[in-house]
Length: 273
Image 1 (cartoon, rainbow, N blue to C red):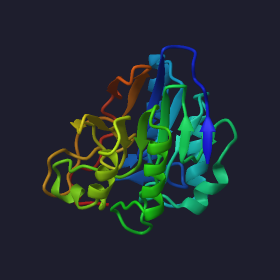
Image 2 (cartoon, rainbow, N blue to C red):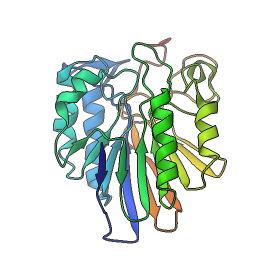
Image 3 (cartoon, rainbow, N blue to C red):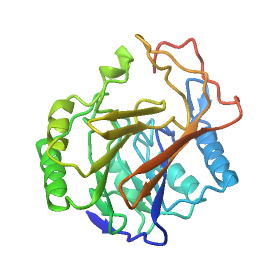
């Protein structure tokens, strides 16, 4: 599905990235001692309080932890406090048949391609391999990526997917990265219009420059993974979100923000989930 938003009210487009909410059917559903609906709603409250003006929300996967329709309903109900449209995609914990019932015209979109303006487009890729933690892009997804970049090569491009297409330096987490990242980067090398890649999955702030392309991830709205860890480890950092501004000339500015409170501290002694 393709959408044209034509956000041309200013010389830039502002995005809000929300990721890895890990919601449950019960409102008090807890992930490693964090009630994920409470932490998600606290993040939304902080965004409203900060008065950040943005055009689009991007939710980069792992919306649900338990596959339930109720968990997706919690997301839709909660995100409705923000009036902007939301693009979401599936992560490894998501269940696409449950997600399918919650697309909302003018609010929740499941897209492959969107024109944000005359200058910017988003390509949204599905890296989910159901039942496993690592990511993979099918031949169809690779062809989609290549064809859009070729056909609309004059548009600055932001790519969204759940799984990280680079190694982040944590051995346990990098085993669950995008498995066909070499093929993915081979396609990108053919084009000069890809400006940034936005992913979820890693529950931490990543901002790196690879082949003149920014590779970005955001904090989870619940638990945070400790960077550069050989084995599974949690961080003491608070839940957060990323703000991104896309300029007409193809440049990008971005900031990560977190809750000031340390209330949502997970069980740091756990070995996984």
